[in-house]
Image 1 (cartoon, rainbow, N blue to C red):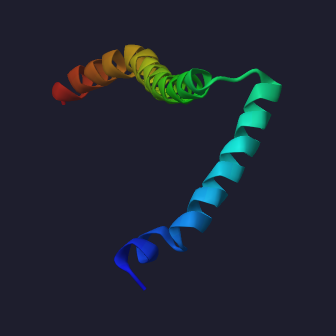
Image 2: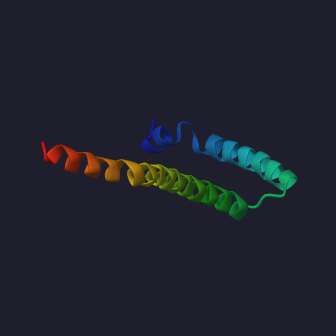
Amino acid sequence: MSALTRILGDSRLRVILKLLVVSFLVGLVMNAFGWSPLDVFYGIQKFFIDLWNLGFHAMDRFLGYIMLGAAIVVPAFVLLRIANYRK
């Protein structure tokens, strides 16, 4: 068994034939849906951008909740520290 056969997993002719058949089937499906290779690329890119933005939106909401709570907690803490300082 040659090194190329080990890498490809089969003989060169069979691998080329399999790739042609799978490429034809994928091309038929993509044509049926009206997709192009760039549409697939842009879809994947949009998925990762939306995932990135979702993460930052969640972080923004989390920090917003902290700031909202801190608007009450920090002044209350300062007032309690001042009240307990005199004792």
